[in-house]
Length: 271
Image 1: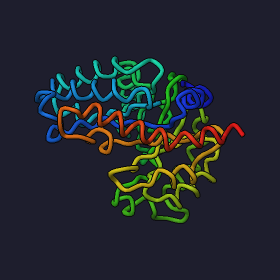
Image 2: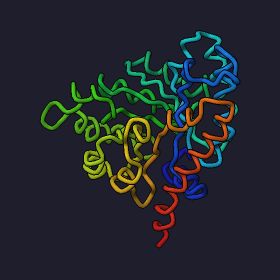
Image 3: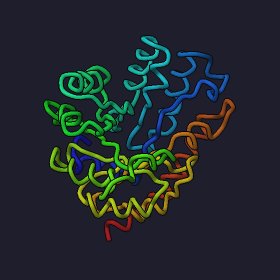
Image 4: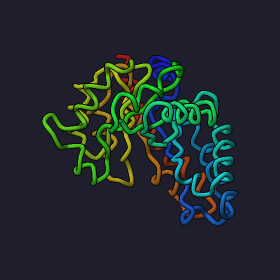
């Protein structure tokens, strides 16, 4: 899974391109898990255990852990250790600084946490991105390109060509398809189709399916390739499928349901 081919082989094995986002909101964690850091850790480990059969990646959002300081960071490390070895871990950190600072951010994500990939904001250009790849040949850098939030209109669509197109076109010269992925939101499938034309060889991490309104089948049709090419992230629709003590079982059922909808694309790819 440290290369495009390796990741696709994992996806073929599971017939899934599901990425489960770990966004443990303290207000929504079932009371049966406990409170504070303990409740968050119990909740996340249960989600991982119940959904790992269907997921090829987990994406912990660091903000939910960092709010607890050192205790939350330690819990995140233990949660990552609980992820099966054959599943990708994407640190959703959205780091975006330059030079020596960027290199230390990379070390903290890859060497410190043990993540396989990290999300990076490319607003400051090449020297805010390349440090995440230099010396980390077996890891992924996931660049924000076209995001799924409403505020994306503030900057990402401005310019000629639009900013998100400049990011995708320029950055492909910084790293290969074994090093770079792109974040492309699910809420604009027509743009995802255009971006696939701009970056035909790269994986896309696609948030926004489920609670944010993105349609799974539209995303698959717009971005699917002969190497898969998609990691489709779902967070709230899986994490909070139930607010009760059966949340783990409910999460498993929702992850299974999504995998079943993805499976035909893998079967067709072998025709």
